[in-house]
Image 1 (tube, rainbow, N blue to C red):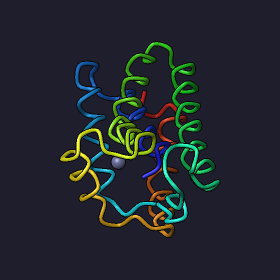
Image 2: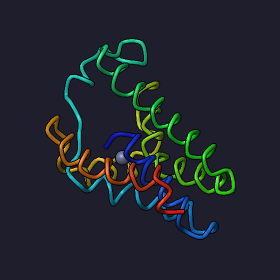
Image 3: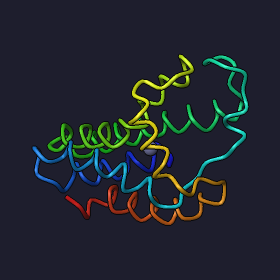
Image 4: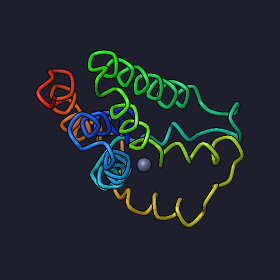
Length: 151
Ligand SMILES: [Zn+2]
């Protein structure tokens, strides 16, 4: 699932859940979301090895997605400064499991192989067409998050 979608769920949790529970709830939301059909594209992974051997699609999708996730998190925190800590905590914890994949991208091997095996195993439907279901989730959540209806 895209980091932007995970971040949206994390921001929504940050806007609604009592502060001590934001981190665990957002972290858990990552795995629940990954179990749903979602986007991925095999072209992203066509590369030699290491960070700089990645395909242009990798840079467009993965890095663009990360930048968009950061941007919407900052935007939500600026709109609701009284919940900024919860919003940033929620977004960070919601994308954290995917950030652990950075080890595989940069070093070519998993940081925690058992965790990564579990994380990959729950993602039973990762295909380009998964963007449809992902948008069906992300757009309403984005509307809820940025309309202020969760505050
Ligand atoms: Zn994931």
